Length: 96
Image 1 (cartoon, rainbow, N blue to C red):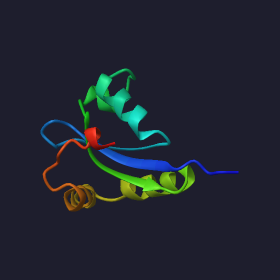
Image 2 (image 1 turned 90 degrees about the vertical axis):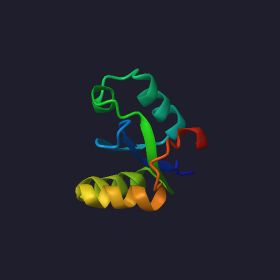
Image 3 (image 1 turned 60 degrees about the horizontal axis):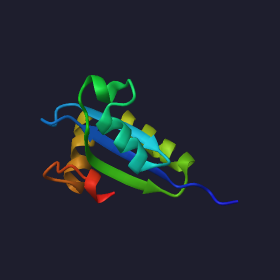
């Protein structure tokens, strides 16, 4: 049986002040949903439609564990994570 990989991602708003951390098994589809506002969610309410960070995990289970670590961290921890990966807060959605 093959495990499905998972993705952990962080979205932000156009001025990089609101962060949303999520997990999914299909990053492309999930980012499309956020950007099109097709789902009533935090990201729609706060216009967090810019992908600024993502990780690939071996399984959805390990992705969930990692998401909880990130969510449990401080705002500064999230900012450092993003800035080490994507210092200019470029929208990475075209790269996936």
